Amino acid sequence: MLDIASSVNLFAARSCSFDGVKKQIETLSFDKAMPWATMTRLRETGLQSDTFIATQNGWRPAGSLFAGDTVLTFDHGAQPVRAIQTVEIDPKILPDRKSHLMHVPAGVLGNRQDMQILPMQEVVIELDEAEDRYGDPFVLIPAHMLDGYKGIHKASFTTKITVVMLAFEREEILYSNGGLLAVSSTEGCFSPIAALSSGTSETYPRLPAAELRRLVQPASKPLPPAFAESSIDETYAAIEARLA
Image (cartoon, rainbow, N blue to C red; front, side, top):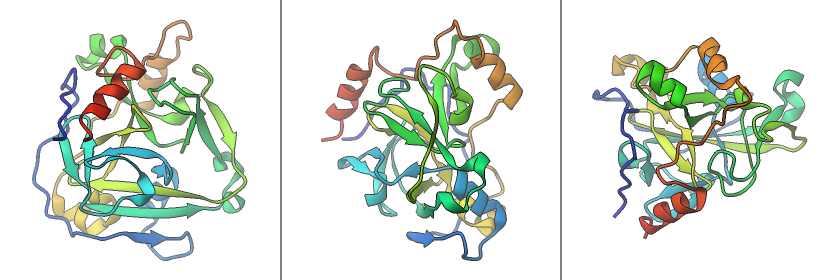
């Protein structure tokens, strides 16, 4: 059985129904026609295809998942993937300001190995300051805003990479590469019509960028990843024990 109870369940998505259009895997390239807002999101968020995701069948690369597969989420247990989009990113056609990834050394955000993520991909950190100020310790933050923290830094790439976006009925937080918590999308992100018909955003609340910078700026204060357990190894073991 897949069921991991979060240590704190304050960071829950808004509850609402969703009647969006079901989609299967759709591989996109930059020269294909699609709404600009969606294409921009696809360029800037998502996980590389070789990133391991906790699923009903154990840890699987994001690129091997299909619509209908069950994935372990931080707040809502096992949830089916509603839609998947994949994009191949060619650094040669990106502007200089966007032709990089964020390198996250092993252990810094719960990841068991070094990994690289898109600068705008949101991850979850846990901050006492956020709990004191907002009553919720969990903060969504784009990876680029952690530049300089414990070795996280911009890393250029010269070859094409494949990015996978997993979408659910509502936004979900996924366990990736052992423990890093990454934010997924809603199915409405792939379909403007579905987004309009849903009537709600079904998303987690976000802090303004200025407030995020204020929270993470003090270099003297640690930014621990949002672990349910007391260490990376214990967190990984807890997840593994429930992936049978």
